[in-house]
Length: 152
Image (cartoon, rainbow, N blue to C red; front, side, top):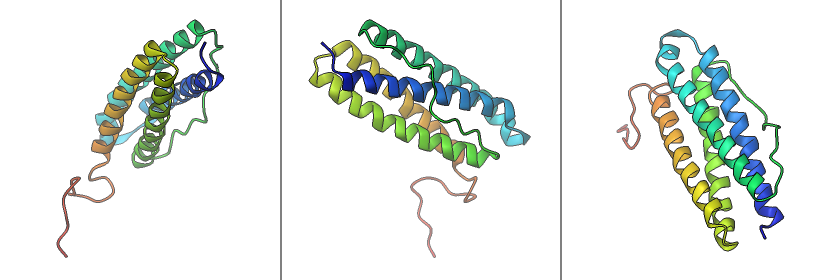
C-alpha cells in the first residue's frame, strides 16, 4: 500500500504542473516584441508538455486510489520576458527538487512504476530549466555566456 506522503507528493506535482502549464501558455500569448516572437513557440511547447505531465501524474494517482487535485499552484505570468524566464527557471528548480524527493520516496516504498514516471518527468524538467537558462543568457548581462569569467 502506498503512503499518504507519496500521494501528497503526487498531488503537489499535479498542482505544480497545472500551474506552469497555464503560466507558460499565458506567457506564450502575452509575450511581445522581437524577443517574444523568438520564444513564444517555446513557451507553448513547454506548456503542452507540462499539461501532459499533469495528466500522467493524475492517472497514476488515480491508479493508486488517490484523488487528483484540480487546483493549480499560484500562477505568475510576469510583465517582461526577463521576468517571465526568471520566474519560470525558479519554478523548474522547485519542480526538480520536488521530483527528486518523490523519486526517493517511491523507491523506498517499492513503487517502481511511479518512480519511473517521476524520473521521466524529472528529465523533462531538467531540459526545461536548461532551455529557460539559455534564453536568459545575455538578457541581463549582454555578451556573457555561462562559465566565462570576466577579467577586470
